Amino acid sequence: MNQMQSFIEKAKNDKELMAKLDTLGASGAETDKIIALAADYGFNVTAEDYRQAVEQAGPHKKGELAEEDLEAAAGGAGGATENRYNPEVCSKYTMVHYNCVGLLTMTCCDHYRMVYLGASHPDNRHTCQMGVFDYHFSI
Image (cartoon, rainbow, N blue to C red; front, side):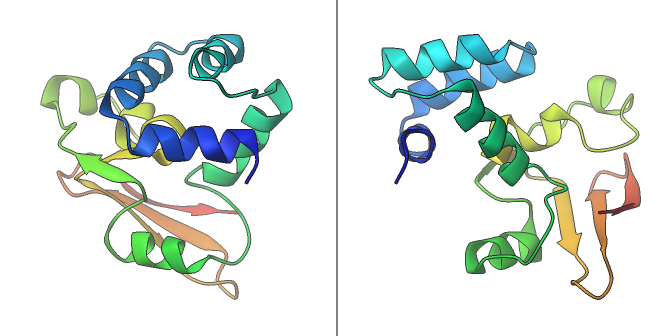
């Protein structure tokens, strides 16, 4: 397991670290701040490691789904979930936003759903169960 994967696993099991990552992500922090936080926890993460993790974790990732992705697609987006719905904030969205999926899709809103329609149909359906958005995104 590489350093970025190890850091992600640590974050999934450490509420304090996850809260710090969520704060950084919500504020639009630069990659170097996330790398510095990883270093604070003893992980040697590079900008390239982070870029690849973002590419692989995004709600629009391409390719076949792994078993855990299939489970996540059936009921949400992946990672832990929490109620992030705020009508004043969410009503401004027209598509998936940071608040819907969190950093590296690790803490998704309870109301966000992404359904992968299959390799022969290269669209993903993104919905907010609170009615904020419902659209297809071609990959």
